[in-house]
Length: 89
Image 1 (cartoon, rainbow, N blue to C red):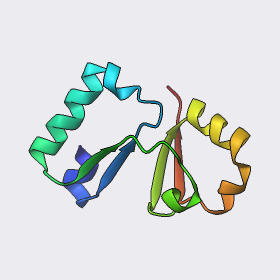
Image 2: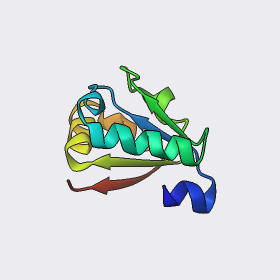
Image 3: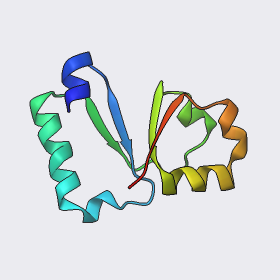
Image 4: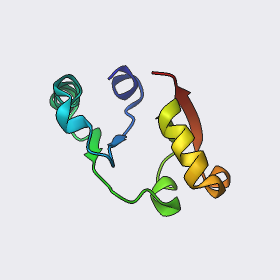
């Protein structure tokens, strides 16, 4: 929320596994941000995360679990990815 407020960033939260739907806290946080700063956050259930999808972004924030999946399934993406911040959950 602070990133959006301080820099006007456009945020896309990608949830290909559909896990956010079962986490009320996360859904409410996204709704609160959308209410506070409209049109700056998007929830995407994009099922296919490919190189073209990744190239849309300047910064990728990903969990360690998600990062391991990307490395195991698509190591060629490393050349295409934007700046990456890996967060340990």
